[in-house]
Amino acid sequence: MNSLVRALTSSVGKKFVMGITGLLLCGFLVIHLAGNLLLYVGAEQYNHYAHSMHSQEWLVNIAEVGLLALFAAHLFLAIRLTTENRAARQQRYELKKSKKDDPTTDLHADSWMFISGAVVLAFLLVHLADFRFELRDLDDVAYKTTTASGEIIDKEPFDKAVALLKNPISRWVYLIGSVLLAFHLSHGFASAFQSLGMSHPKYNGLIRVAGIVFAFVVGIGFASFVVWAYYLE
Amino acid sequence: MSDVLNLTLKIWRQANSEDRGGFQTYQLSGISTHMSFLEMLDVLNEQLIANGEEPVHFDHDCREGICGTCSLMINGQAHGPDRETTTCQLHMRRFNDGDTIVIEPWRARAFPVIRDLVVDRSAFDRIVSAGGYVSVNTGNAPDANSLPVPQQDQEKAMDAAACIGCGACVAACKNASAMLFVSAKVSQFAVLPQGKPERDRRVLRMVAQMDEENFGSCTNTYECEAACPAAISVSNIARLNREYLRASLTSDA
Image (tube, rainbow over the protein chains, first blue to last red):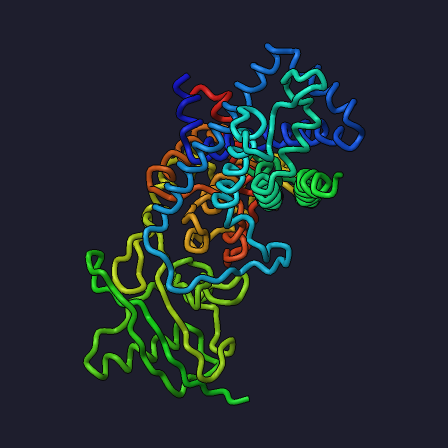
């Protein structure tokens, strides 16, 4: 037990947890995106998916607790590591230039992980307020609808999603959040493998390319729902 | 092209570890492009001594790129603009007439400035003392093939052993992390049979010492690899991560 605590509190161990929570959250992104893509299949299929998922109450609870734990660990370590890393430099250089000559690193996603992560967190909080806690009951974002008989009932998941995606605040937050998420993943995905000790000349190129492709797919995938809702009648 | 340079040098001066320090600007003329960077600083120091001023302190020893004593952040790059080159092997032909050159010490909490451009790198020595060795006396060179080592493993060990411990990895890293150095010192033994008996204890102790010295963590930006004069690969860092995980989960320590 002691050795486990020692391992997890070491610099290498902290990066290991960072990598594994990051990759597990990538897994969540895949499932979330796959579910959302049902919006394109049709309202009926999307509603059926949403209703059947939420009818498994205990499963949803377990998933929510699990995701919360992953986010909490990833977030706590991000703050911890960033603070420690800044302190390790102590005094900044007057002038600092890279010696890398790899053109794909021009954007320096690796130097902006804390900032891009913070923007994604802000997006996530708005997103949870919108969908999970239904706190955004503004005039244009209604969670309820009135039936022909005058009864007030919950909106169907598809209608709720479209209403929220059409909201001007949510639209921009989701759009910027998706782009920054892609930016975050463009370094994070491949970096996690290195932190977990997975490096081999046969696969390193593949992992790097897979990380970029994954970032694009996730970023464009989630951003597309906002654009789709905007043009939806 | 003229082979004589007139330069403006912006050099970090700091009287001792307590002093706040600051930049001072010096004009230097008639520098031959055939000089090494350190010879250029020698010329500056002779000029300063002749004027009764304190010369600029900087670390140097072999001046042939193998001892790892020289350091210097030159225009924001560890060991200057050339890849796989130490400051002592950098030549003035890489600069142009009229250039301003900014020279700073390695900056890390674990490498406190002693004076001017000289930093205390004994944190590296303490990390090696913690486990970067083989305890048994391995004696003379054994008979060929009495201890079979695959050629690829031997190459990996030799590539890692090329580390000269200069600290450029720490200087170039945005987190002042020593992971490339520690990973080289762990890897050079971890892949060889002679290093196997102590591999768990070695990696656990060296990482613990590294953390104690207040180096940062690795963010996988690979600036260290680009700055390394000995071309140590970041694949060693992945090996260090693996070794550490394996030792943490399976060793008795």
